[in-house]
Amino acid sequence: MKPAFAALAGLFLLSACNAAPEAGSLVDRHIAALGGEAAIENVGSIRVQVEVTEPEFTVRGNYRADRNGHMRIDIFADDTRVFTEAMNGETGWQMFASGEVADLSPEGEAALRQGITGNLFGLHEYEGLGHQVSEGATVTIDGIDYRTIDIVLDNGHERRLYLDPQTFLVARERSEFALHPDLDPDEEIFETRYSDYREVGGVIRAFASERINLRTGEVAQTTRIESIQINPDLDPAQFERPASPQSEQ
Image (tube, rainbow, N blue to C red):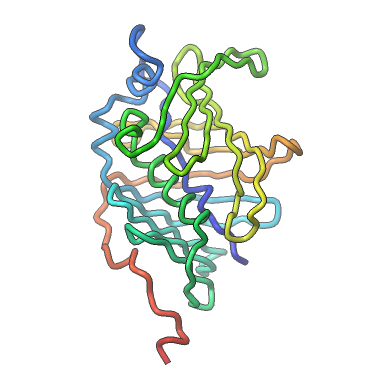
């Protein structure tokens, strides 16, 4: 099993109950609905325990990340670690169940960086990170007129966020990408739908999501957050690339 979980790392900041202001740009209203700039920027590090289900398996993940570009996710089947992906602040690595360590592809590294951005930064900070954020068209889906925000990341990857017209919260997200880029590089168009919103550290986040392949209509992945810790102490050593067993002999 080699589930490259770069894509699941984009949990993205969401909110469900804070009142949005009646004036200001779409991004301003969205950020206010999340709880405001200060609450978002107060999140310096995060730890998430998550259950991930795909058609062929269900696994659990232990995800950690900080604003300095460090992240690691360990994947467990039952109580056995079967895979790890990480960024040490500059480059990424992956470790298999055997303990063998290898580089990530550029696409895999980009997906992990995207997850760090989505989990720890608000849209008001994106321009300073080199990304582009703009207001898109109003789009009607299932009878709901969604205001949209278009994002172009610094690597050219495009995302569209669909905001609820009443609350200015992200209800859906669409993007084209490879779900597991280091396993299968073929890209698909996915729609992610968020639900089960709960407040954690002043920001309300989605504790459940469903990712739909829009070409086939099939559910490609569902996630269920078991717990989120805000600003945990993270040992920097866990993000450093370990030696493969072969190199230790």
